Image 1 (cartoon, one colour):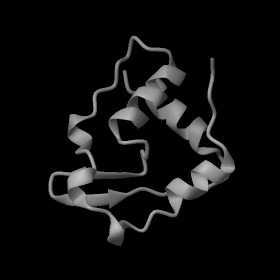
Image 2 (cartoon, helix red, strand yellow):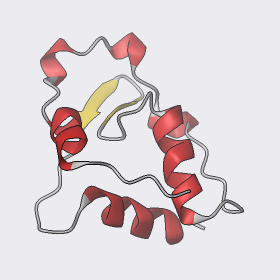
Image 3 (cartoon, helix red, strand yellow):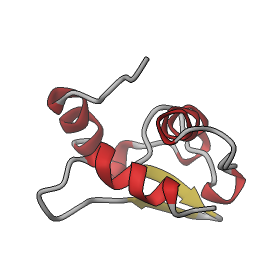
Image 4 (cartoon, helix red, strand yellow):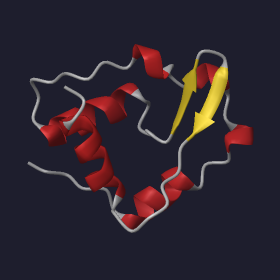
Amino acid sequence: MSQTITPEEYQHLRDVDIRTVDPDTVPDIRSVHIDPTLPPAERIRDVARQMNGNPLVYRCGGLLVKTSFAGTRPLQAVLEDCLEHSI
């Protein structure tokens, strides 16, 4: 069963104000494990789960990071490409 992110859900993830995020609630990107044996859609779900549901906000050591994408490709397509090529 494939689950895609809706435009509204993406907007909610994108609109997070990083100044209001408690760094202790955000995972460190270095602790996120990508299982290359999972199909791409499952990898996305697993990574999102490890990142507390928002893959756009994470820590790298003591630095809080918010990612954004400029372009016309949907977030899901970008994440699928990243995960497919992360092996």
